[in-house]
Length: 380
Image (cartoon, rainbow, N blue to C red; front, top):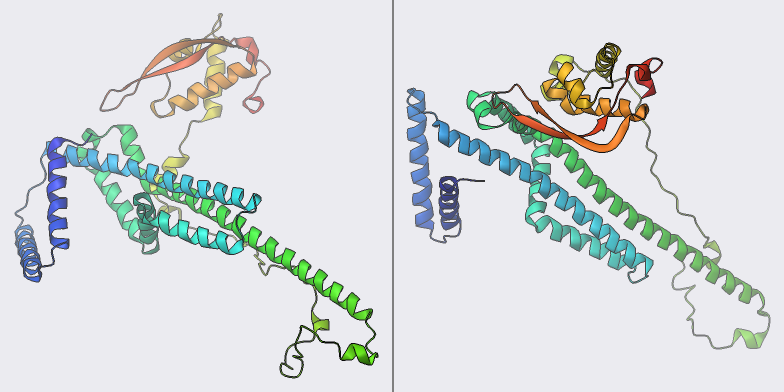
């Protein structure tokens, strides 16, 4: 949680900003801005002279922890936007099915709801992220995050898991943003299909009405003089509006889309030295074949069935691949029907600066060497 001192500083800063931005007095605004300019000039002069101080350890830890909490809250904002789009899609579907909305109302509702969503706090966060992406501000932010993590104080202020989450913040937010955009596109696609279907239906209805008119027109004796002078509700418009196509030219047209997207199958090349380190870090994983071979070799030397706790005692699990290693053992047990409905607890110690202890609740298994005489990793 944010400390009391940090919260007080945040409140003071926000009050000062609100006081100036809401103040209609031009002179006070000018005095405030001039004061800030003088302070910045003085700070710049001190930095040029080498006269500056770094934050103390306590303040640095507070700031880093606050940054992490705020960064993780962005995920919740993005997911609320995605949930809002999905809920809107559901409501529009129900309205369309019940025939409570016509096409104009659907479009009007869609536009209104989009404006309302953008005005919410989470909507503004999402819009701000998209704006930063379009203006390449995210690259600068990503660079600053990496430099921040490289500082020694960051290693002492945050756990390895928190450091990893912070280092992959931008890529993770990109994934969350793509989910939001996909949900929005699905809703717009449903609305577009509803509108197109309605247009096609109306075209067919107009065509049917015209066919009925043609059929009735054929049954009329146009040579009869009395018929020619029969009063009509339709005024003679052929002379005054002679540029309008005659009624015989009306045809029923099927809706056709002009979308003709071609797949780009050209080979794309990139310099591996320019690939971000977070990309390689995301690909880093357990060598399943090597772990399978080591487990199989250990079982071949044991005369009794081994559980996960037994396996861990004789074959220590790597620090960064604990979940993958345990999952592979459980997969091996499931493949050989050596798993039970009971559970046991194992405690793993990670060799980090924080000496973290991790406890896992895992099913009790009993792996034997003869289970893997003719079993390979591909069979799992």
